[in-house]
Length: 317
Image (cartoon, rainbow, N blue to C red):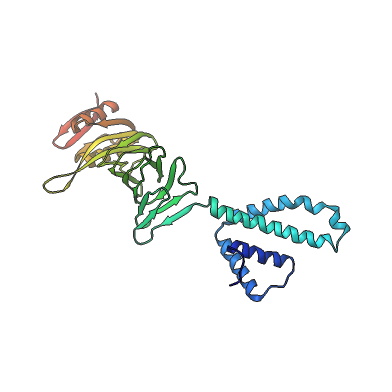
């Protein structure tokens, strides 16, 4: 090994394969190294990729097996033909492995029991919380910087006006040019907290939401629902104060709408049980609690009666 002339292990292993198919004598140590390398390579690719590589190679070699020269010279060209075919097979298979691992297989980062920092090629830094997984394609960073996230993470994105940075999460995505934000995913609850810069959050069924610093986007765990919450700290106590800036529902049941409103406005809503599954599409932006409940009742064709913090929705006579 000390006198090895090859610059990398791939060339060395390929040379061992050439010796093997040409029936040259190999030492026990060389055979052992070759076997170990085969095992390590096969672990890095899935069974589908292996089968596809074999199919492509067999198809490419198919025409060679019908050449008459092989039949006419069984003791000459036949032997070398199969040696050449074996080398071609190896070259294509190993080439597929190297190509897949080097140029196509995405990089996957996983935080097990502690936070893990991931430094991306564009200078961005991602802090993965325990249990989170980040997938980065080999093409990153391209014209559009795209990553995939499972779980929770904080992103400190390197600024670039020409190359947007997009995080695809579970059912929603966040697009930025350069900023610091946090993505949280707990079951059906999705949230994006913005600390610096600007972001655009896309979620199925609702309009794109644009956040400013110290704002939070969330779906409250309800599909086709989006809200923007202002998060500011009180000067004296440094306590975080939150206020609902906007709330959108698109084809959401009255039962789910009422649950979200009750939780965020600290109220109680009573409505006819038979209307619980009735679908509601409404946008609340900046109105008072009374005004928003009145708007909801109008859409449903109900009238409202208020008793302290309880709103009673009834069908109009």
